[in-house]
Length: 115
Image 1 (cartoon, one colour):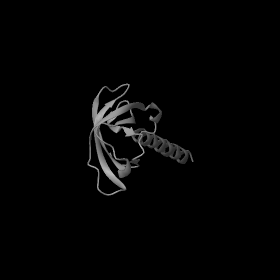
Image 2 (cartoon, one colour):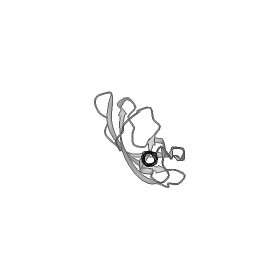
Image 3 (tube, one colour):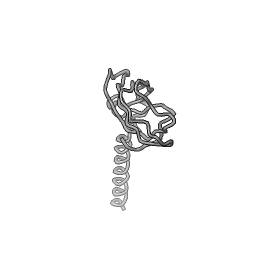
Image 4 (tube, one colour):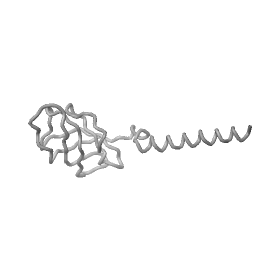
């Protein structure tokens, strides 16, 4: 009987440990630690001829509390009706230790799970 209880305790501990590791890698453990800054767009994919959602690659200079002029880029699904342009400023949030994982607050941005 003691062996069954110990095995159950070990499995529970293993599941909790794996869950904590997965949550930390997904960024769920540090969401409150996001920093806010701005991104000055220096490059953007051409505006597509068709309306609707399209992929856009944005390049720019991110500036924030712990980042001073870091060049970053990302690919997003974006609504062509709100296409970004060179020279635009976007409000962004990013993890302090990884500004390459920035996300923007913009009406054209659509959910996209790529990086």
